[in-house]
Amino acid sequence: MGTSPALHPDRRDGAHPDRRVIDWRIRLARPGDGAAMSEIEASAAHLFEQYEEFDDLVIGAARTPQQFESIIRKGRSLVAELDGRIIGLAAAVPFSRELHLEELSVGCDWQGQGAGALLLSALCIDARASGFQAVTLETFCEVPWNRPFYGRRGFEVVEDLAAHPRLKEDLYRKISAGMPAHVRCAMIKFLT
Image (spheres, rainbow, N blue to C red):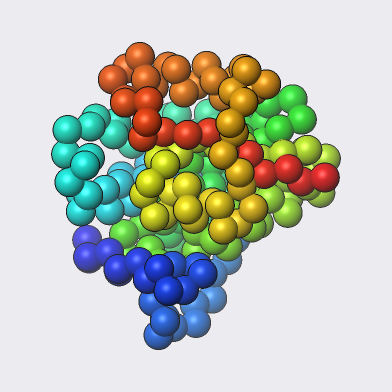
């Protein structure tokens, strides 16, 4: 596995200014993609190793292929492919009129080159076309490729968790498992 490219805060997309043009293919995730999606999530998690503040936190293991297959069956997840190989994913599940982004990951070798932004954009376009009113997610508050990344793409921090009981419950579940409350937040992007 190669080293991950550095994120460049001077670019809106966080990509290297000299990045090459890459012919990504975005498609709906299909049965059988779970193993590759699990590997991508594990690969992407290596980026957290450069942040000392996460040394004592338990980030959690990547989802298993079976867990991803269960998410795939919901029919709302996307993958980014390059030359027939999955290099990124947007795993999402519907909750009433909202689509919840469970995971957005790009493999270590492909981070910082626009695949994550493209996956997120495609997911939001598809969600809106499908009649969802919003896309929701939970993320780390101060990690550059988390809350700030989503904020630049129209997501807002959910300040009133009482108005979003599902998000509140998810955050409290993580906190009760040992995650400090100040490091996580819920976000929403309204599509209508």
